[in-house]
Length: 185
Image (cartoon, rainbow, N blue to C red; front, side, top):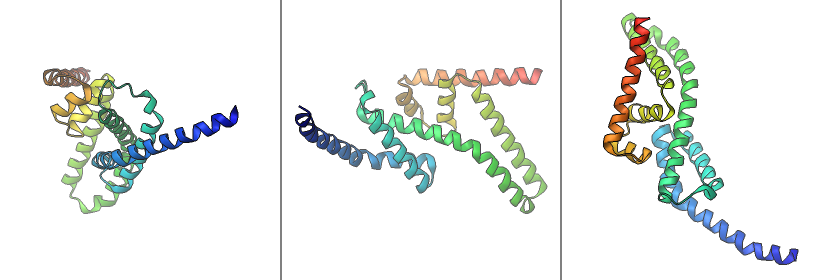
């Protein structure tokens, strides 16, 4: 009985391996280009691509067929890249501070002050985005940090153009309200 199961499993394993090879061949270049658009360098893009392909392979059983398979793959790609870029941004601030100290000697005091104000505003904006609901935060980050168009956001969130615009408007209003409350305090 065991011999029959193991000999019957070999063709299935070979078929599964061929399917994964085909999947890798078909999607790897597209996933890499998407990862590169986020990472902006080849080494990080390659690492991100490998991570995404492993996620796709290990979660292929979770694909429900509600959308095209390519949409599912690129949703995983975008989400993974955004997650990793967000983590990387935390480390980036420390690197910026060190780099600022190195180049401060080459900047005029006015340029240095302007740069510090800009960095402070970026940190505050990230803080305010963290106060938004997860979907609103994600939509704002995609729109304003990753320059997604309304059409891209429609596809990402499966919403109409007017719904995307309304959610962006409401998210901006929420941030404005937070700023007003903070300014009044």
